[in-house]
Length: 277
View 1 (spheres, rainbow, N blue to C red):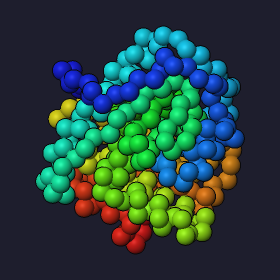
View 2: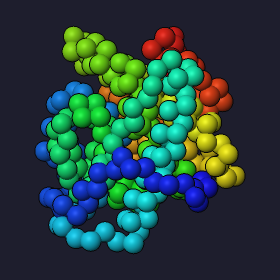
View 3: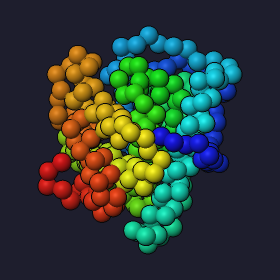
């Protein structure tokens, strides 16, 4: 992705020097608190991270690689601001207010509860902030096999897409529906929410195609496949259980991203009206 000359967003809150406790695994307190809120959207990679050695996080200066990741994140966030500030008036008829992105290392707190690197990037609608542990980019490439800068950009765009959903009132409506639904029904609603965010990420990608390099879209499609529920459960040595899925299969995630990319229209992302996903 060609980002030379792109100024980083000012909507960055850098908490990386604050330190924190160890990274939680699948049973970590941070993850349990966040999931208990029920109003949380992100990329849950705990089936993979639970297999890795736990690390301790203490206050320290970010490495050169982490500083590059922070700069990259700020630049990608700036592109989402440019895109959605244009698309909202054109396609929705309203102004767009961008989110703040919190960069952290290890663990942090949000108004949706505590979280750790084990939860993956996430968006908290209660404070309108997207949260990103800068170590996640290394995990994305080294542990999940999703290589390339546009794979990382897609992850950021996906979390911003959850903010887009919040701006449209979709997150609030889905959360209300989840309150009175069974666990299976609530999971199915969450899948549609996540796939819509993938589609909206594709709309963003179509809008920045002038910045794309050969292979970038393939990197995003591969990343979408690598964070599908079925892929992550298989990689963790489990038999995929569709009724437990909360983000969609690899095929669904890549398909909906492609749908948004090909159309460039938000209306093509109606996963809740789709008979089949």
